[in-house]
Length: 522
Picture 1 (cartoon, rainbow, N blue to C red):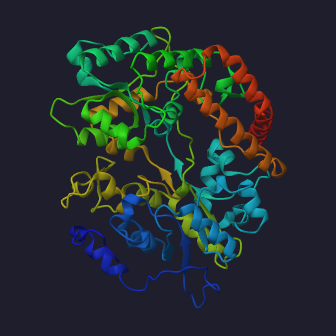
Picture 2 (cartoon, one colour):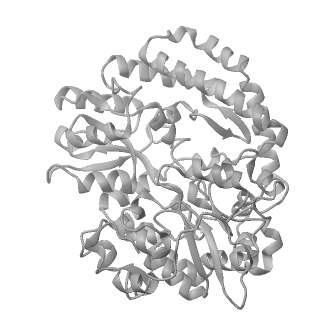
Picture 3 (cartoon, helix red, strand yellow):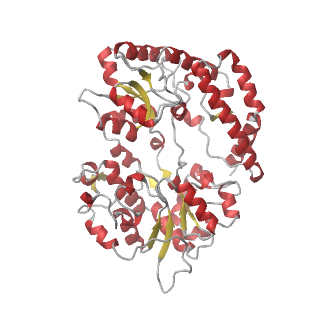
């Protein structure tokens, strides 16, 4: 194993010695099926940046060494270079020579996963049901996961990463400087009016140059402030109908608010070019009082980097118009996330399809779920009163590794892989009081009524949808920025919506609506 950080050599020495021989790189699939009782697979998947800072191959992690030991199956992992996942995936597909397992965001494959099956790139897993009893048993008990896993034709295309509890669907939202609220004697804002009061105080009394530091993408991720006007950002469901926020009543009011806040210096003056690195710096150095972020990579990381002991953050509730209301919109994840590592498929020309299904099915067994969520008992976790509790190796690593880095060596739960994420992972990962409170706060919305599942249009609609969507969304983003900055008068809003329709918004909604109805009928 090639370790990039020599400090962790002692930490993983025993597991490394086990793996040190016999694992070599591979650029193409096995030429022939396993013979003479050999049980070996090739597996193409990206390696996260967190894990890649410690190892060069997933097979060298304690988690995966244990998985191979428990299943009796040897796995040779093939990783595209960091930042080249899509490029290398396209090259792999064009080569026509595939490893046994390809883990990728198959929902983004041109034409969808059904086309990949039709083109004999990956296999319909329904043909391997007997080799994946744990996975199929889970699908039978969880209808929404089953629907998300099927194409419109009823084909099952992957072993996905599944969030196993509703609480895991809420992990991001608005983050506010709680210490500033306390210092200024202000309560946590709930209504739009209260938010304006707070942001104004941050500007005037804390000399904050960007009280609300977010770009358009950040607003969209959490539907921040638009939800107060009864609309979402982008595409969403409303009583079973697919809608597009910018074309709906209420969206003009949302943009009018942001235009006002921009003019008054409450919204970051650089919102149109703001990147995450600058936003991070703003919330840490006092240039911002409110940002968008997650429980771990946001609140957890910011608190660990706190400039002093008085620094305090909190997860803020989604803004509403009237006190006591519950916001209709907020940040919410899909049960199966749209991530590169979330979909493990078996190649159609693999001569080891049954073995591949058996290995992937392990992640949905009780033993596999425990390994992939908590690691190795007695090493990365202990059972305490029936609760799998991470050891200091994870929570207070003796070599100085962050919790996320340690978890990347022992679990799939931190990233994504073919298993079911356990909420007990998040209960410990979100260990700070600020994180736990934010987790509860951000789960309070009616977003479950509006979240669209990922949808597949018909083969002959793929290019049409892509072209129309590019035109509509490019124009919408351009006009949104101009309306907020005052470059485009808000009086022109109706004509802007008309132009969206001229560019094909109605046809987009028609295709998405039909796709949603097919989803319901799966």
